[in-house]
Image (cartoon, rainbow, N blue to C red; front, side):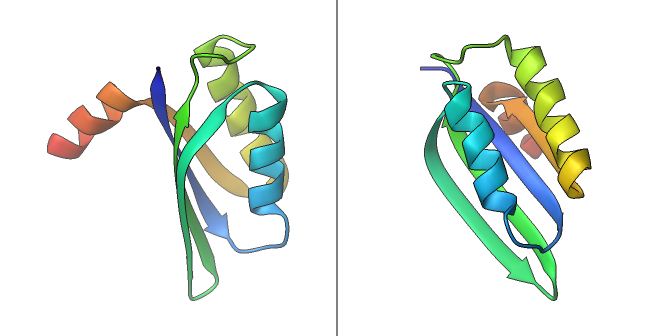
Length: 90
């Protein structure tokens, strides 16, 4: 298993979860856990995913998710689990 963390942040709007999940499913990325909240109109989502069966390279997934975020008006970041954990310790 190759775990990765996806974060999505931005103004709330209809379809954010649907667009991100549709992209992930189309590219063989499995969602292991998902948490989302809306605070004062701001959407925040964190997903733990398994990218081991992904149909694209990790960097391609990262770039395409970032582009999807721009398209729908949010910021989407994809990070490998080990990098995410190390950044949280700093």
